[in-house]
Image (tube, rainbow, N blue to C red; front, top):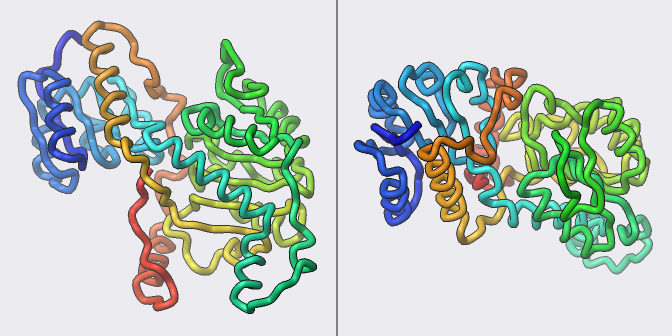
Length: 356
């Protein structure tokens, strides 16, 4: 790919950043519109050879005969990642654009679990001074943290965990030339490797991408390998975890706690047992937005554009290994019921849109 003929842009950025993106793509023609303008998007995809989308990719992007590069401005592409999407084109996303904030959120969840924040809140409401109620607090100092995933979030998270006295090990999809910034990095060539690492974990943080290989990566078998004192935090995607298996483990005390910043489905309906599980924190799929989030995404896109114009493979491209079909048909009734409950419940804070 030497140059771009027609660029479709639907990102919801400040005008100055959109202008910089237009200038950086250097296409002969540009179509800039809202991601909700489906008619304009469908028409543009008949001729566009590059598309930078502010939302999920629809069937028109996957079937476009002209599209040679598709970028989705999100941390992952999840159910958009069909096999057809990768046929004859480069696919990228804005993975890592909010990584520092996600890493902070993982630390907050982990500390909230070991310091029993739910119990503390109950004591505060009752104005009760009871050290006995907090006898199950734990120290992580000297413990071992297993981070599943070795991307931008994991790289931000490792030094934060080390500052807490933990020794971070990363589980990566492929071999790496260096273990930095982790104490160790292990390529998960087979499931036995993952299970062996989990068996010695004091804390597990899920920061992996979602695809068919990682769907329900944490299931009954994986949870059984965790020590009873282990805490699990998920800041990746909800479907990385078999939530029914996790709820069973939390209720019978097989693990010590879980902090979930993502769920499956989203919004999480009010009836799953996770809401009632002991020492469990379930928070909406939202995190603080780093000040330069969109600038970070823009820089990544422009580096990819430069690589493609120069005829070299861009770093961070997605591949057919990222195809996700197991969750392509979401639990639609559960999602609709959950949204209705959020709208009508006076006790519930209205949910915001995910900001990752």
